[in-house]
Structures are given as C-alpha cells and as structure tokens.
Image (cartoon, rainbow over all chains, first blue to last red):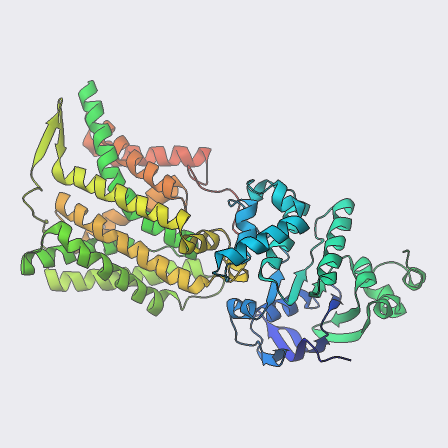
Length: 248
Length: 294
C-alpha cells in the first residue's frame, strides 16, 4: 500500500458541549474516493471539518503528507491543497457564477493563471460558461452544487473533501453529481466523501470507513463495507439480502 | 406648507442625511461582516469630533486638513479596540456579548473624554462654518455642503473598495457567509479587524462635520447612537445603499414634520416611519430576508 495522503491519529474533537469524535484513527490513501458512512450523529461532518480547519481537534494529529494540520487555519490548509465543499450551499448568492468560481482561486494572485484555470473549468462544467453572469442565488440546488465543485477545483487541489454533496438533490441531478465526482477522481484528485446516499457512494468508492459514535468501527474497500451484512443492515438502510446483492 | 419649506427640508435631508449615512455605514459594515453590534459607534463620532477640536485648539490645524490625522488615528483606535475587546468574543453568544462589550468601550471612552474635556459643550470652528450661500430662496451652509461632498466622496470610495478591489471581495464574501469565505482562503479575522478599523475611520469625517454643525459634549453619543442604529435598521442591516437612503429619510421626515407641525414631533415622526416600514419589511428597506448560514 502506498504512503497515506492523510492520516487521522487519535483525533478527539467537539463543539464545547462534549466530544463528538472520540479518538478517530484511519488513513486516506492517495487517489480514488474514500467514503465515510455512519449513522446520524456519529461525527462524519465534524471529522471533515477537522481536516479543513473549521474545527480544531482537542487531541490527536491529522497528518497531510507528514505535516500536522492541527492548529492551522482553513486558509493555511487550503494552501496545502486541501479544499472542502461544505454540506450547506456555500456559493455567494449575490455574486455571479463566474465571480464565485474565480473566488475558488482567491489564493492565486497571478491573474493569468486564474484565467487559464477558469477556461479549463468552463470546459469541464458547461454551466459555468452558460450561466457565467447569472447570480449564483438564481441557480437550482443541483446547479449550485456543480458550481461549488467547479469552484473547489480552481486551486487544483490534491484532496477534495465533500460533505453530503447529494443533500436535497433530485435523482437526475444526483446522477450528474456522482458522475462529476468520478470525473474529479479520474482527473487525479483524492476525494474524501461523506454521503447520506451511502449505497451509491460506497459502490463508487475505492475505500469505505464506518464511523460510529465518534470512532472508526470498520474500514475496507467500498464494496467490502457495502457488503458487510451487519453494516448494511444497520447503517445503509434496507435488508441484509439487499446489502449482499446490491442492484447495479 | 409652501414649496420652499419642502425644498429646504429635502435639502437638509440630502446634505445632513448623507453625513449620518456615512457614520452609520461603519456600523452596518461592522455588523454585516462581524455580527457585532457596535454600540460604541456614537462615541467614536464624538471622540473623532474631540480629536478635530484638540488639533484645532492646540495646533491651529484646519478641520479638513485635520482629517488627514484623525482618519488614520480613528482607524488605529478601531483596530486596537477590535484586537483587544472584540476578537476575544467567540461562540454563539458573540452578537449578544458584543452589545455589552461595546457598551463598556463606550463608557470607557465617554468617561475619558469627560475627564479630559469636561462636560461643557464645545463646537468646532472655521471661517466657513457660519457662512452660507443662497440659491433661489434656499440657504446652503458651506459646512453642510462640504459635509455632503465629503460623505459622498467617502461613500464612493467605500463602494469602490467593496466592488473593485480584492479586499472588497473578501469583505463581501465575509458579509455573505463567514464559513464559506474561510473555505475559499479568505482570512476572515483579518477582514474583521480591518473592517472594524474602517468603521471607526469613517467617523473621523462624520465627527468633524457633526462637531462643526452641533454643539457637543462627551454625552452626545447617546443621541447619535440611537440615530445611527435606527438608520441601519431602517436601511437594512449590512446594506450601504440602505444606510444612505435611511439617513436622508430620517432627516427629511424630521424636517418636514418640523415645518408643517412642530419640531417637537420630528423624532417621533421618524420612528413612526421606521415602525411602518418594519411592519411592511421586517428586514428593512434593503435588508436580506435570508438568515446568514453560520
């Protein structure tokens, strides 16, 4: 196995009212999709926030290529090549689609580089070109999510953290969104994903992590986690049989 | 009521209202970016007026030239207050706590000013302060016109900063959503500190014009803060255009009622307008209905 891109070591974190993460240990390998699943309140989103600097762990280490992220600001973490698309829609509604996407490269001061990246993003995400001058607030939920994906790629990140990207999307948009995650993966990004649509996400993921009550309960390949009878019955909804024979 | 009185009220509304709008802009920016209700904004205006007064009395520096000193001085004072008092406020009770903390800052500044300058009223002087010119039947005081031009220039500069500069993008992003701003690499803490400094800096010009057009003492901040707060509530929290319109409306309504009825009812009339607008649009004239995502 290659050297881990991110390693969580005994991470303990919370919001002041007690610890949500109670000693999380696991590693994210470079390339591919790592999908974290678990019941509500297990600490999935909190874990992602510790990696992006929004929540500071009380104990433990988060190593990104050997460098400890604990104590760094979101800005410093972004500079290392880690971007997060949060659970709530995060576009600036009063700004245009293009302004929002350009803001993804806020840390890049070379205007020429930003223009080149924007041109590439326009090709990858037609909506960025088609709706460039529209206010971001006028887009549908699914369209906003795609623009958020486009924005997060403007820094050409190494690790993309996605927190429940399918939340509130209709089935058709969901398909497009999962297709876009695959596209990001195929473009060489490492994806760390928390997804409520766990079945579909695990099918796509190279690796799966089950989080329960603030601790890692199981790790394995996406399919191993998906086909684990206990996990399937407990966390993925549906019957054991269904968990063993997922529809393709 | 004749047309001259109406025009005169409109003139006062525009000239004086723009200066109030400038002072309120600092308040609305600070609230918009930081979720901080800065009760000390009124006392910043009075402090700035006293700084102009001190420069004039002790060093004979003209009021407008003095702005070259008082504006950066107020910026630095704002930055220090933000770093020492405001930046320490964290957590969900931050906004509520900010009211108490900035009230403490207010009392601290007011008490100091009272000690240094006594409680006697003073007014800023200049050869242009009592002078006026007439267009038709309407009198225009030099200082009021200069105040309007200054306010317009500074509001224009603020607008330029917000919509044409990289820092402005950071401010607007932080205004909309601090978490999302942080996630694209904006240093929200730094933006907050500079915004608080800018909010204090605009009171230098506002305080000078206020001090030249009104007799004031350290306690004048009570009247000022109530006006400034109602301006940003009427205009919509976080809206620069709203502050401008509400500032003009506040003076205009007060003057109209003063002319056709009695000056005693001027302030009441403005508050009636405020209540009516809030019944119609609880978020104010240009405020956003959507709550900010924390």
